Length: 193
Image (cartoon, rainbow, N blue to C red):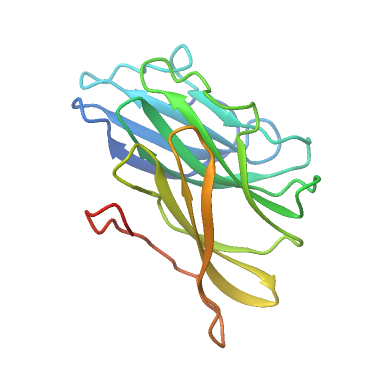
């Protein structure tokens, strides 16, 4: 089965098991003329479960037509799928916005606002990398990324609860020279990262 038959580029797929023998996939998609984030759930038999079949569901198209969305790291919990992504549209929060969207596990329906919940911003288009988020043990997640909001690239982390509320944001490293370019995260199996 094809996940998407749209005429445009689909890149940066991220894949994980869904806990039921199937798979969850998130990718960056250019079918609308700019980069958006899409997701799909596939059953163990290969049936496409979200969005009426081929094409998946739109996670975020951004608040402006010229905004690009990407990153597309995700983590599943018992009730759905958190997708952690950036939005390059310049809006009130800044030049680059980190957001989260939650999709219903069964239907793929969006659980938060159309553009996702805002988590952090930078004053300029300064994305340098992001790792997949990890579960925090209490139905939320922690995500990591790098950006150049202070000139050189620094590494950051955020913790988000099950309702998409930001609990904290910290600087992981602001040492001399660039940080966060190939940042990754793994759980410590104790609710941390």
